[in-house]
Image: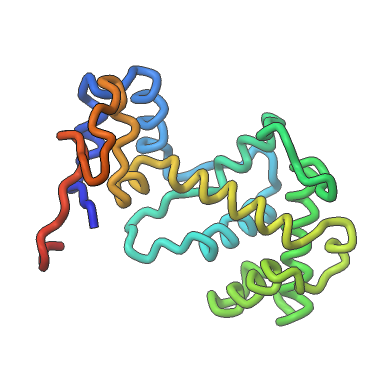
Length: 202
């Protein structure tokens, strides 16, 4: 698999290959404070969102996980959206209120505990029911659970892969785009793109 040496993203961000605006945005993600105080969600709901994110995007090999909940909290506080939604879905703030509440309802119906109190296997079981559209709970009368799961998963995936360290994992150098991209043929690479690892390399 393509692989960056440790710290390559930070190295790239200090070069003229990256625009100042992109550099500022990515450095802000790299240097985000370890603790985030929620502004939209109350403390318990935010803890629930973090627990859900930790199961959807587990990061067992990362000493400090990429936090996905702050981006959702900030977006909902600002009231921004991507400009469309399924006609069966309520506005995003209401969807998250109903959806996260419904996850707790499903956890209590299945295991008589709140989602954050469950072990990882039981949390996964609840989320699997949600993804399949089979989670119990009265909130799902007002919210199509498979659509909510789809939207939440998409937002978390976008947040994860917008982080420079996640981009580094997959060998992405799209942020270094000042010179443009000339080598666009099959298996052609720019000099700034990561090299293939030799067999046996870690």
